Length: 459
Ligand code: SF4
Ligand code: SF4
Image 1 (tube, rainbow, N blue to C red):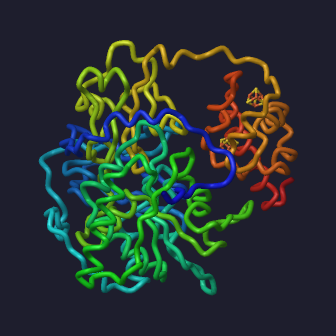
Image 2 (spheres, protein in one colour; image 1 turned 90 degrees about the vertical axis):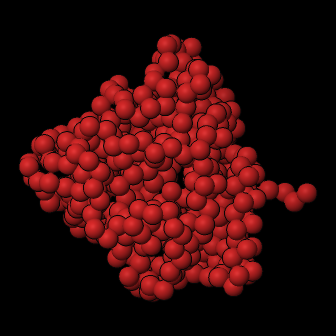
Image 3 (cartoon, rainbow, N blue to C red; image 1 turned 90 degrees about the horizontal axis):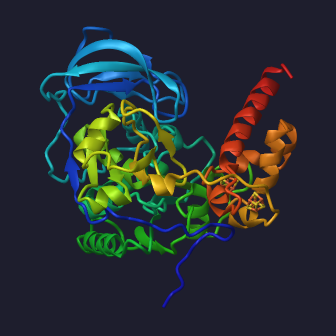
């Protein structure tokens, strides 16, 4: 049997706990009220286009992109803007948000909500990127970087490979897995559109080997389309990957798929690659073929006690829906829940309010039992170097933690703290339960401030 590909250094093998992978996607109806933040992406917040009393429909522009690295935000519901307020998001940041009282479910004219598959890929590169920007699409795998910016390939630079990220290596999460099974054809059309936008003739869809049904289905659909003459032979291939966390990190996925290493401080573009997540690619299909902006997303709601009690779900949720409504639709908070995490268990953050809105980057809600959530006592570092062995970026997490604690940020910068992809493998590996990722995140923020101050010439 052929050896499955993977990345070369570090990585861990947490229990996968894909408890909801057999649960088909269900639509969650709009809640009575949504809170839609104008910043759900990396970059500048969008510029507000509505005010109290404005009547909106699904797809109405609420905020337009402000500058190059920014993203448009649309209404996910129909109704009336109740107020412009601030809400706490899943990262704990206070964000300006449009609060809308929901009335009916009217969509903007021109948005096609039918399930019919459309395969028009006649648009040119520029038109595709413009449409992606208008639809407010951002990296839905959690990175939330504006997709139009990623695919605006600078003059003189070339891309030769597009990689679709269907890895979903975070334990518990199954949203992308379900999308690959239920929207395989849409994913293939989205991939072709992104290939056109990037100007490439080769794409891989990378999927870990724990999703054999998705691998088989996509291989079959691609073969069928090649047989029908809709795509050239070898144009898109499915790449089965070894199970290993964080296989879905951009740099790790590029290395597994192409053998190319993205150097420290460089981007996928520097090794002629571009990566797009499965949910993002399907959002591109919807924007291009259905004129549908980014107004909803698939959210996995899971947890051991929840699923054991017959709950759990993969839900299509309108952006801005409060967390509480999403959990309620999946069976409610089970007794004995110790914490609720938004995102995956390795990189997500625990939330303390059920009012936190679902945003474009929210792929999962995990209810962790009190017994699992019990905070183990933090011990002294025993210099075992397991965190070093687990780091896929070749960093020394124990040392970075120390430097950040001592506020020696320049030294942390020299030891490449900014290369950290925040995968959490170091914290997961640590027998002393040291919160390495928390310290490293803090350090990255401080180094970022230092760099900005240097650019301004104030340090
Ligand atoms: S230092 Fe960063 S990249 Fe390395 S294991 Fe820890 S979180 Fe992951
Ligand atoms: S894994 Fe934990 S105990 Fe071991 S070296 Fe790293 S920080 Fe220290």
